[in-house]
Length: 475
Image 1 (tube, rainbow, N blue to C red):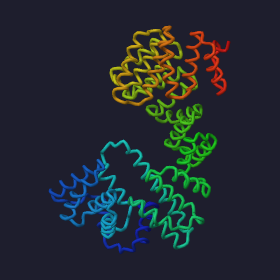
Image 2 (cartoon, rainbow, N blue to C red):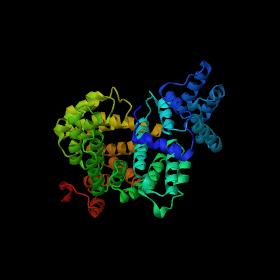
Image 3 (tube, rainbow, N blue to C red):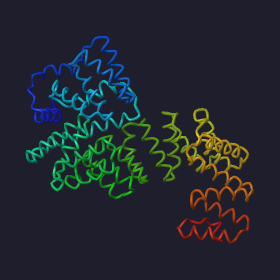
Image 4 (tube, helix red, strand yellow):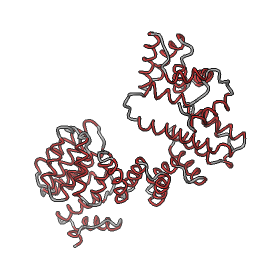
């Protein structure tokens, strides 16, 4: 196995922090390359433990791991996983005891502990958070490379604290990691220490705290890839467009040929509604990988928002050909056809999707909206009544009920049933304050009812918030 800077650094951490003699070094690498040999009973117990670990049922996994340890006290994975289980059920002393014993068995490369988790628990299993786990592992490894390059810039005391903290972070002991890193004087916080804190906070889900420390790192060293990625996410979520662009430009400067970086820039630009910039990046990705589903869908939606409907249709159709089990591109494809006047084709796209998404309220609402606009009022009324019954009975997301009530009010308005329309829209405005879209519909209803006073009040309100008044109501 060819050594890397990262593996050499991990080896250095182990020797620096735990001062163990390398008397089991060959056995360690032998056991990394080949599975431990277990008796049949222990194999069964270990598999039962892993089954519970995959479901994050730590309490249930502990007895099986204990049986494995009693049968083979040199089986490192059992100690490591039982240590993690104890940590997750708040039995800290037992957790530290198992980890300490594991370190005595194999103290030379602490990366083994994250390798074990991937090899035994997640290998071959399709978890929703699999990508997040991989990204977290990559970020921790990149942090290790950065620390290995900059560790000699610190005094011996700070160096020891950083190394101990990183060792705890790699093995999943975030509490110990924070304990050591917090001993560093905050006024002397280096880029290395701040970077370590940022990754640790991120790994326990404290994103706001992580972003604070990523910003500190950036002010000390602005050219770290993972730091710029995380700050781009933070700034884009806060819609700080120019600040986000700076980080995206830094990423291209750091690695202009990386497919993942270019795709990341395209997705972040889209999230900021910077659609033209998003299209530029995503086009580069699609030139490299024409069948990237995510890039096709995102570029298709970006094309839709800049009103390039023909190209939106091409991308969205290609995406749907790759994956027919996602509703979002189908909705955008339908809207794209509608915008270029192909209303029947727009409705056909939605109807065809009913065979897959027959219980999805988003599809029902999209169909109802199209039927209202094409004056198929009876069909629209039937769909909306069904949606409202289902949503109210199952306590589903109130967004669906809100849109259904709005469409129902619009349906009554289009059919000339103005008092019924007014009743529905007033319910919405009462529940959801004065949403401009709702107030505009109510103004139309008042206009149709010749209720001049209330009509003028609604129009005055819309003008006060700089909402664009349609020409037919300006008179």
